[in-house]
Image (cartoon, rainbow, N blue to C red):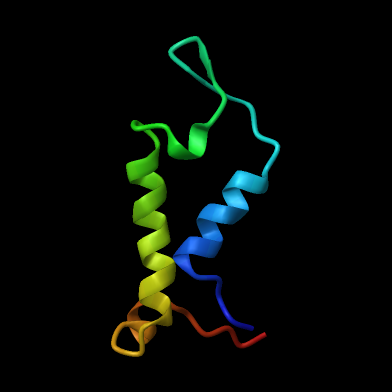
Length: 65
């Protein structure tokens, strides 16, 4: 099973029907919000690094199941 890419991860977040409130204010486009997006980008990079053969062993785990 292949992991998704960073871009696919971000697109998957956009498809979620998620209500986000920050400091009492509803955030409609939370994926692109300037206070949230840096965290999303960090997770997206981990997906991209898992695809890179140089980092795949470090960024993924093998299951015995």
